Image 1: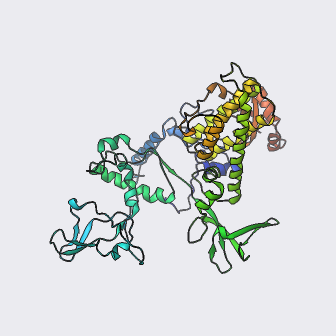
Image 2: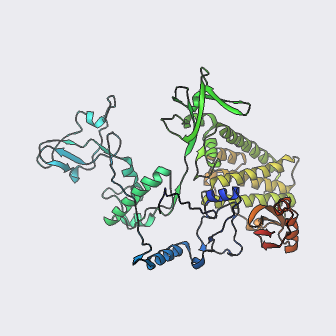
Image 3: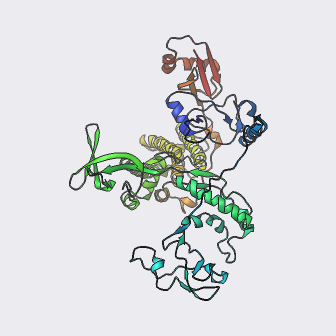
Amino acid sequence: MDYGTGAIFGCPAHDQRDLDFVNKYKLGNIPVVCPEGQDPKTFVITDTAFDGDGRMINSRFLDGMTIDQAKEEVAKRLEAETRGNEPVGERQVNFRLRDWGISRQRYWGCPIPVIHCPKCDVVPVPDKDLPVRLPEDATFDKPGNALDHHPTWKHVTCPKCGGKAQRETDTMDTFVDSSWYFARFTDPWNENAPTTPKVANRMMPVDQYIGGVEHAILHLLYSRFFTRAMKATGHIDMKEPFAGMFTQGMVVHETYQKPDGTYVTPAEVKIEMIGSERRASMIYGGEPITIGPIEKMSKSKKNTVEPDDIIATYGADVARWFMLSDSPPDRDVIWSDERVQGAARYAQRLWRLVNEAAAAAKSAPPARPAAFGNDALALRKVGHGTLDKVSTGIERLHFNVCLAHIREYTNALADVLAKGGNPAPDLAWAVKEAAVILVQLISPMMPHLAEECWQVLGRTGLVSEADWPQIERDLLVEDTMTLVVQVNGKKRGEVSVASDAQTKEIEGAVLALDAVKSALDGKPVRKVIVVPKRIVNVVG
């Protein structure tokens, strides 16, 4: 079985895209991996897939095993079971390595250290002449490889026979350097060897590898190859260079074509709404333009957006916020001027909000109040709850989720400030704390704006150098809880009840939901299953 066979593999509880699909069509899911410390009987998946480590559940003979243990057990069983005197399966590591033409006909890149001699054929450059350095006076006024056109650089004496010879003018693909430079970075001052093994072994492997699709295939493969080669030669003592891998999505954009089929850039196109239809035309001349499909940005189709123009118009912070907020980092980002403008408006709102908070916080006592009223306590609960969610989200690279939580927090602070008047001392202190937390939360995403806001709040130093705020866990305890409601195994909604609500109270609140009544369609309720603090399933 391989790709392209028509077979479909779905993992709806443990892959976000699969989960989004099954939730859209109300297909349900069965978790097969449970986080450590979680009761498998109460563990459910709703809107967020669980893609972390844990132990197998709902998996028959694999139940209770870690993921690695389960893989090992499956492999052992397939190897032990035979069909026709042959094992059902056997282990194989396939690196899918192919021949790699590393030479490039260009100036930039590492020179290939060989010399071509008419008598001696290909001769390596002697160690004493390494490294081969590129000429700094190369010119690029002629087509082709600048090294071929250089008057002197390529002409050398053969190290073997002393006759006239020529350097290799091809340079190495930049993938060659980038496939091992992370090991070099562990001790770049070593002038006698590529690495200092003691240092490299202590610092490596690299904690997190982040790359696009092309890198995750080719670059990752070659990096692993180089690492194994360097282990064999004693430069490092490890087989794998990276501890974790994350494949980021690509930035995509609509394509635009003239009637003759030639592509034009987004900067040349004007988009108008005619009724419910989007129509495009050239900004200059008004020539009609066909709006094509959304595709990966490429020079050939001219559907690229110039970063310098974006930054000049909106600033780097806005561009960064849009890129992080518009979709999960592992999915493609559809570039949209409208959504970029939305990010710009949010940045402006943040600036106004922080200034309002700074004004309201002037009456705050210097010391933390001994007690907090309901309004102050509610704001602090939202703040520390958001801090907890964002801290966890950043660690998991769920940046778009983090930004959604920050927006909700912004709204909560704005609601408090909208009441106006002079806040009570406890509330003023809570507003001050909330503004500080908010600025620190945005600082990884909008560092320039965050530093300006930090000064407005009267803080010293740089926010980028400040300690991350500490979460007060007591504030994370909620007075109410939200339970997922299912009818015959399919999600139909949610219900909020008191944290200490008894089973009868929960059942009554669930059965009163219009979504539940609609799903039952007059059928009698046979059973209501309440999984404490997680889910309620109505069986009709």
